[in-house]
Amino acid sequence: MAKSAKKKKQFYGIGEWYGDLYADLPTLKKKAYANTKFTTVICPYFAQVPALGPKSGKLHCNKKGGICSLRNFHEAVIPGDDITFGPITATCPNRFLEDGVIVQHIAKTVLNTESPLFAKEIAFLMRPKSGVAGDAEADAALEEEEAEAKEGAEGTEAAAAESAREDVGRIDLVFVDPNDKEKWCAVEMQAVYFSGGEMGKDLAVIRDLADTANGTPMPGAARRPDFRSSGPKRLMPQLMIKVPTLRRWGKKMVVVIDKPFLESMSEMKKEDHISNCDIVWVVVRFDVQPGTGKAKLVIDQTIFTTLDRAVDALTSGTPTTLPDFEAKLGGKLGQVFTTP
Image 1 (cartoon, rainbow, N blue to C red):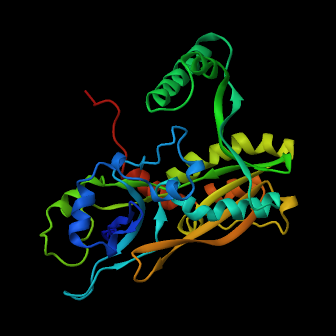
Image 2: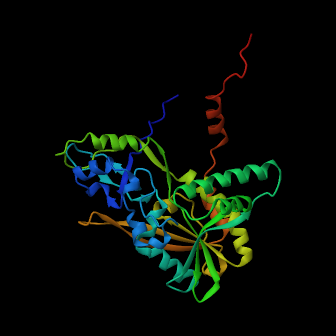
Image 3: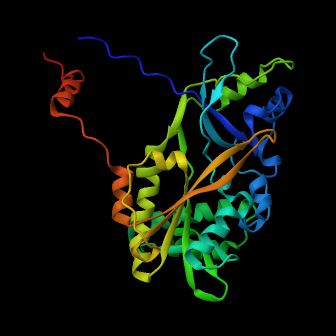
């Protein structure tokens, strides 16, 4: 049997770092960032929309390492040529807050206002009241609340205990029409996780650069955006749990993703009008602004879909054939018990 072609490694590395385009950073700045504690740096996106920052009012970066986004690094074909880069995809949901662009877009599209009120972390599902499952859920939630309190979040131990008994799930962000409090929408901002080598390997490469080095090094490990973990495993359950109730209430779920995330999904059948949809997808892209060291968030498109179509798009794929499956199966078979 002929050997299959070796799969090309995906050299995804830093796209943006503390709000700056990594590829445009001078070497000394790269090295400085590699040795910076992320909690000492103000997140530029929190700073632009501070109301949507942490409850504590502290606007420091909360993403370990300070990496805002990833992009693919393409090795030079000819020695001496520059590395080229693919599109930027967000790995931190705070990246979507740039200049409040999505806030205004969502408010205008769904609520017909440009200056919405907001609320964060609203209890949505109720916890079991009794039994082992209820006790376990309450203990887990209490630990979460206590951790938040230590980080400066508001609330007393009694309030934390009460919250632990009551809510098992939250709607992270809600926008409300200031002129009609009964007009509101839920918002979910979904960044992408990544799989492969840890980012610390890239930081090690950067720390070892000579101070006079020019250009951008290739990533220190092979990795890729894990759209499957981010979509079917994380986003889809959120939608399946929350959207049916929101739909009964006559409310919309807004999901903010970037263009590479959308392109990882199957094509969704679109509704022509917002009144016929369950989910409003706000798709953004990050356009590099030459000479500025920054990328700009731009609304790429807005899509109206039903929950069923969204689930299909997040989960569908092309099944393998039976012969191919059984060929793979045969190559993996092993005995459970050794024969005497």
